[in-house]
Length: 371
Image (cartoon, rainbow, N blue to C red):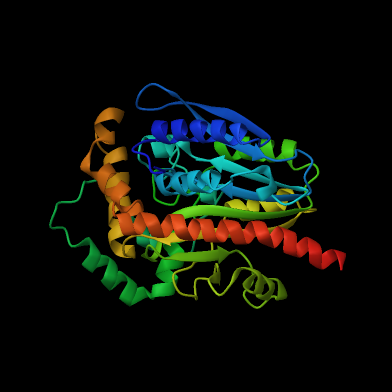
């Protein structure tokens, strides 16, 4: 019902869902923001924004999906399930709105890549104002020959063994951080954060500038897949784990709250994350930014899929249509979207749980201030 086979299908389901909202009496403002790129069917690709409720609301629940293109299959399905659960305008508390940003990276979802049309990881592209798009993490240069290959790997190439030995020698946390933080030096390499703010992020920031005029408090959930145990969610926050704010978020959203700290479990700190970039530009709003990350496969097989797909994209003569159906793209899709009913149900259920908790939390926080 909620899961789509491609980006065009997900967009079609969203439009049907919006029609349903309007027929149920909701006030809806739907906009399509074209990014100037075409999909596999020569369709104009766009970011969809949906504002539900009063335009002058002081409290906002914001949900974003598909920042990492191919991860948008799961994010879209979760958002569609949440829209379907909105039965009547009274489901939304007073002076509150809900907004969905549906597939922030439509090109990546349409062409089955994690990055955008410029090979940029958009969750490394939201640098703070004044921060330069330059440099790379300590250890990335040493790791690069293992990651950024120019010859497509043979089936029996022992990449996972090589990665395991490298990690054993250099340390798990250091290797994880070097790989994941984001680099701004190698435009054909993995985890490239760009040389400038990309069009998609700029569209989002412009839309927020137009719509957050009255917002004083925002709970923001950014949906991702790939990190953690299969089907289980981790709630990541870019906050010092020793700060009072981190403790407060754990009290509000539960024990799944985890800091973006390379020393804590599966997490790692990043440059240019969406929450950090958005909150930096709207400092007068009280933010609770959570990345809801759902596990798929183990880290080394996942990196293996990213590595092979990046190699064939840059160092082959295949056409875009040939790349789309190449086994490397299909394996990448499988790495971020597990084709199992149990996994799908877990994502929908846990996505709804956090969404409903975040919506109720806006009301609770407001009541606490007025006592």
